[in-house]
Length: 218
Image (cartoon, rainbow, N blue to C red; front, side, top):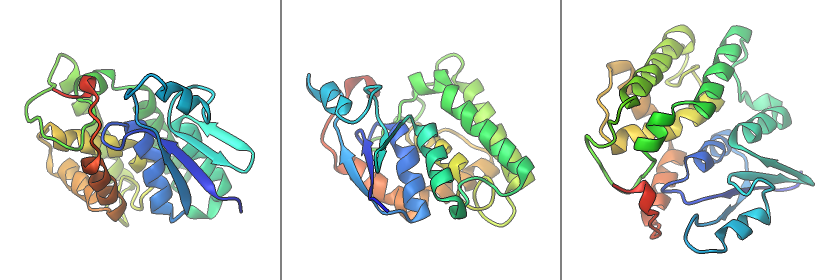
């Protein structure tokens, strides 16, 4: 099979890039990585457009196929590698997993805008603008319900690591950066995601980056 290539942005800031990267690592897929530093000069956008018709990251390249958007990439991987259980096997669990992944993909704008992903630093108490706590409450409710209804057999939302966990991984990092206070179920879930070797690899690389994007800093 032709080598997979994933085009991503800065590991410190690019929450969208983390999702398919983490999933591919957890699935044990070998892939090339092309990292493009975002907003660091005038030609970063043209570099991305060499790979992405949308001008955004992440982008997956496979054979003659180009797949952009994090959710589309994860769905493509699920179809290409059906034995790797990217989604739960049970129909009800799979429907729930797809629903919460789509909700994460399109929602929680208050959290995104006021608590941007930043792995290198800590901002305890920052970012609690109007609407942010409501987003936090909804996310932790999702985690609690997933773990209670479908989480037997492992430490992740549906037991084993799957696409839904990849989609909430950037939120895990946000909650650490901003020292968000969590209930025991959510705290245990955060610890499980952070303990993944692939997650530790991403965080280490993020901390070694030197670029600074001012709009993602307090």
